[in-house]
Length: 204
Length: 204
DNA sequence: TTTTTACATTGACATAGATCAAGTGAAAGC
DNA sequence: GCTTTCACTTGATCTATGTCAATGTAAAAA
Image 1 (tube, each protein chain N blue to C red):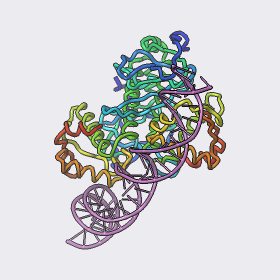
Image 2 (image 1 turned 180 degrees about the horizontal axis):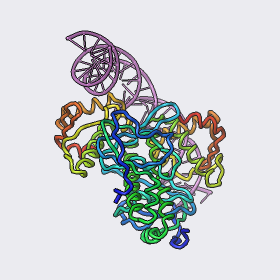
Image 3 (image 1 turned 60 degrees about the vertical axis):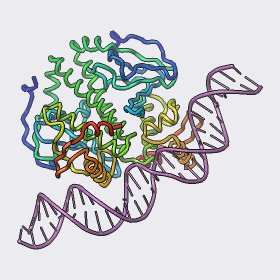
Image 4 (image 1 turned 90 degrees about the vertical axis):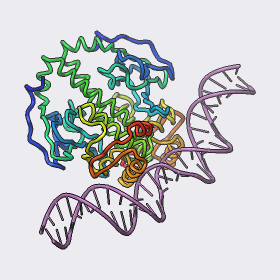
């Protein structure tokens, strides 16, 4: 369905910016390969990682009908995207309610996910946060046909820490603890969920 | 535009439920008068207040195209809503792209707001959190033609605390401190922002 | 009016997680 | 191949905020 408006975009290198919070909004992106993070920052420079995006996921939805993007998106590894110029999406949407409907679905799902994430940020302990995060990654990969047990953490420890509202050191310690308790096995960027049930139980 | 599908619903009493997380999704709501909060809960019973809703604002957007609601909505005071049966919204949307467009706008704005709120939950101190919250309420009221300086806190201290990821006692202490420093004046549920600039400066 | 109950404030103390500091390992640049 | 740099880990200490406890206050019930 989207084939008509997709403009294949070039690839992105690690740390390369897809868009910045001050850029004029024009294009929605769908990750084709690799991964991205989005961030927003406070006036004093502090930054919050608001999300990670993997193949098949939309980036930029929160900027729909806004003059400019509402966050900054950066590639975590060598990645590529499909670019959907929003004018075309909108024009096509006029005659294809299905397309708008698709967008609504994506938006409401991301919104629901963010509400759930508020619960994590507001109420969970460091262990619950990390357990929840790992399980959420696992489910997303499984949903797209990849292994739910073993995957690559393409984001840095400090990105994870920031996203979960913790310090890097805390993430390190909890990873170590989880490993000592046989919940996970870590080998560099690769993580194996050795006991998903126990991780599940830790989510709170 | 929406007149055709609005079904005026009866009013709601304080603490009365608009919908529960397990209810089948069928209806979008727009607050007509009063105010509501939405919450989600973790398996262990902990709860997070995910948002407050005032006249003109949509409740339930995160459940669009989902089988059931994704949160629980409760009235904070005597309130009333417009009910928009979503089937009708959708049917009408097929012939009125403008309507779908409206929904997209609302959704993306709420999404953008939630991302900003993540920054608050993840990175701000208790004082920054409360200052940011008060200013955000102020702006929302101003936007709808009410006073930006003086308004009623219809939600309890513990709702505020929960929403901001803090303990009630902390909220109490920060309110007291803000009052001692001449930033605000509190009289029961009514709050007056006595020095908006200083509050602004505290937001981080 | 009096009593009850829920909400709010204040103080004393405890702790989860931050910060500071040091060290390790591995990738990138020269 | 060496060295610089960056990401990660681990330990020691500090602190913002939570928890516990007591008291105050105002609305609802009786």
